[in-house]
Length: 285
Image 1 (tube, rainbow, N blue to C red):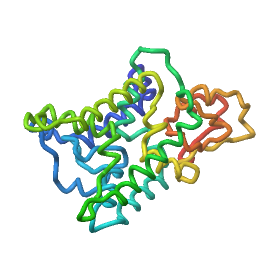
Image 2 (cartoon, rainbow, N blue to C red):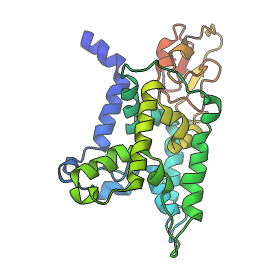
Image 3 (cartoon, one colour):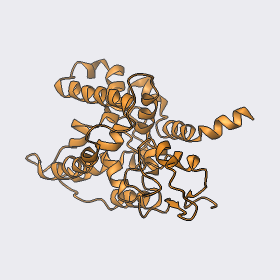
């Protein structure tokens, strides 16, 4: 009974670990320092999952979008846009809370008993819009407008910002390939610095990358209010006790705005609501 209770209380963590293992389980990549190049790489996975990770079976939707936008031959991909719209329309930011590998990394970092924990960073009111700026500028505009002599662009978000790519792809490949290490320079040092900064930030503040920097989270957030999987409040039962906000790691007023753009659908508010006034569209309420 105790084991069942523990599994029930940690079901989200179990799903996160299983999905990360499922999408990053190419063991030969870690043993040989190579990248899987099979059929799976033609398809996107829902979360921020680096294409260059030695264990990755699928492609990252943000990386794939940039690959199309910076290509001299293609400027639009119905598959990638359709994939993002379909996943967003069904789940919204549920992907962030349950399926994203780098979301799991941040969750584990935040459990480290260092620093006084903060629910949000100073300037949160403005910082939360930064991910939309990154989406527009680094993922869309720069790859399209800053091109070389043959019309090809650069995946600027992957190249300059993405800490997930550095952690899951860049560092493992550098460790496994001596020839790669000899060519590492200032850019790699910058990416390691960004990863270190985000990691320390995640120890103190819950999921800062998801809150402020992730362009994939920015895309999915736009679907939160209309996704098939949404939260709903029974106003007749709700006593405005604030238990849902207290339980929310993102510090959101769930009883007021149940489908806030910042909500990652972790479900902690659903468990905290003693009046059963808060439920999801997939529940039996």
